[in-house]
Figure 1 (cartoon, one colour):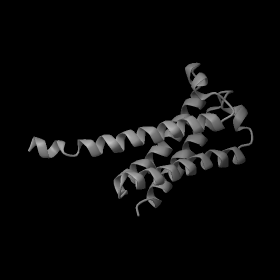
Figure 2 (tube, one colour; figure 1 turned 90 degrees about the horizontal axis):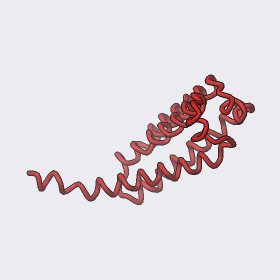
Figure 3 (tube, helix red, strand yellow; figure 1 turned 45 degrees about the vertical axis):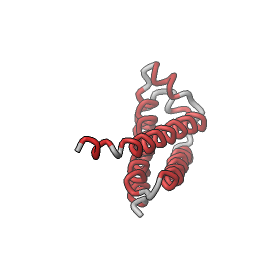
Figure 4 (cartoon, helix red, strand yellow; figure 1 turned 135 degrees about the horizontal axis):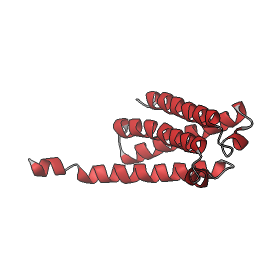
Length: 134
């Protein structure tokens, strides 16, 4: 019985490692396209930066979890994970268009902007995840 249960460990490790790699890639790209330094701002106690980055991460992980659940193979998961990554980056660019002062508001600690960006990221992630239930 234990042997049967542990038979899935290699697949788990493969999917988990790929998911962590995609999350790391998402974070690197997201931190690169934003004109402010979220990690430094969070270390300084900036709640707007913490909310926006947290929302973006969760907004990306939601469709990634759906992709892991529904994918036919590891390459299939990686392809759809990259699509989820792209959609989430586009959500940030849409927020920049909707709120032209976002690049100034987040570093200034404007919580409303951070919460809006987080909510937009989460909403996009939920819709993205729902659409990835092929």
